[in-house]
Image (tube, rainbow, N blue to C red; front, side, top):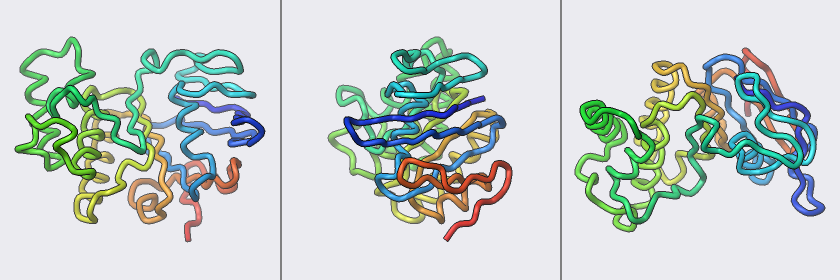
Length: 224
C-alpha cells in the first residue's frame, strides 16, 4: 500500500505540488494524468524517495518512508522505476541491464526471465548490444524490461512509452498490465495521454498545477 498524505513540494519559490493526498491500496494500476508541468513527475519522484517533501508524509505498507527533512533511500523501498529517459547503465549490455536487479536469483530462473522479457518487448537479437547502439524506442523498452525483471512489489513509471510506435506501444502497455496482474504489484503510472490512461486502468487521477483536480478511487474518472 502507498499512502501520500498532504504532501507539498517546492523548487525554490515554485510550488510543484500543493497538499496532495493519494492512496494506492489494491494492486490495480493507478494512472496520474495531466499536462506537462502539472507535478506528475515530482509526485512519482517523491514516492520513489528521490525527492524530499516540504510538507506531509509518505508511507509504504504502513511504514513512514518520507517526511520533511528525511527520506528512506530508494533502494530500500522495493520499487522498480522507469524514468522519462531510459537511464540505462552505459557499460552494460541489454542483457546486463535487464538482469541488473536480479541478485540471488538462480541461473535457470534468471535465463528464463531474460528470455521472457526479450520476447515480451521485442528485443531478441539486441541482448549483446550496449545502450549507445540502441534506438530511442529500443532503449525505452529495455528500461521497462529492467524495471519488471525482479518483480518488485511497487512499480513507478513516468511516461514509459514515449518514442514507441503505436503497435509496440500498445503491446508494451499490455505486458505491463499483465505483469501487474500476475505479480500483484502496485503500479503508479504517469502519462499525459488519455488513451494510455483509458487502456491501462479505470482509476485515473488528474493532476493540474500541482493539485489533484479529479480523483475517483475505484471508478473511471472523466477523460477528454
